[in-house]
Length: 326
Ligand code: APR
Image 1 (tube, protein in one colour):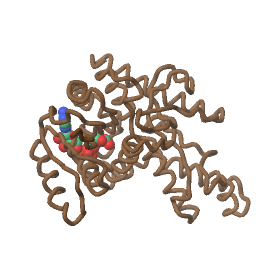
Image 2 (spheres, rainbow, N blue to C red; image 1 turned 90 degrees about the vertical axis):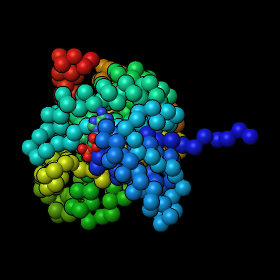
Image 3 (cartoon, helix red, strand yellow; image 1 turned 30 degrees about the vertical axis):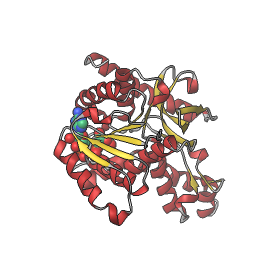
Image 4 (cartoon, rainbow, N blue to C red; image 1 turned 180 degrees about the vertical axis):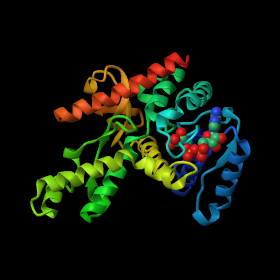
């Protein structure tokens, strides 16, 4: 009797984000999990802990932890969170040298053991590490994608919902550009059930457009610095729950072929005049990985800011080349 293979998800990195991912995948029954970490016992311990809760969570997935990359063989999707997180006062770019080494190691093993997988990169600086992952694996560009935009858009939506006093699920928001200080929250596309957020903000401030703009500017600024705000509070490590659910949303859209329209870091050739660079735009994710990139009209100012963001990532890529990683 021929059998249908079970969905297999490899998580590279069993730290804070990898652990939450494993837990969520188990609870949602999305697929079998292999947690890989150089700290093999940490991976084994987390896998065991999650497996031992399976009766209560009613989970039927298989989960294992290991330091052995060969166990990812046959994975449909690989989510990479291996790498150092920031400490207070650090920018994501400060992680570049140390995390590049880890990505080269992870990428080499993914290429060897899971050559048909779609890879989602979470490790920071994410846009640069996604570029490096594609370079190391040489996978087609639609099978290497970075997580940043889903999280940044969710942060933007959260702050808008608090300001407007509406449910966050009724907000649509998108953040383009790099997952860093130069990210570009798209104000004109921020809506509440299709109503521009700026219209509602202006109403809230009794028609005072400059006050509404001031409040929106503060929300945009807080969104760009949101990761650092969490780092500053945690002091040891960076955000882990929201990055995990964001990466999982992408994985789920790919594995279930949902074709969700999600802001994420994809290789743009002619799109947005990016000229063959990874950056955050909006894409359709399905069985094929990145199935298409939606080119939406941007204002002149947003186009300029996107270019600044792409140029910042180009500087990082140049640094990787100087360091001999590419
Ligand atoms: N292969 C596998 N795992 C590795 C490797 C490697 N070569 N190098 C390091 N790791 C593991 C570490 O042992 C650690 O368990 O990666 C894990 C990272 O976990 P945390 O330090 O808890 O970091 P986390 O909060 O999960 O963030 C991971 O995502 O958002 C980004 O900035 C963040 O770069 C960081 C990454």
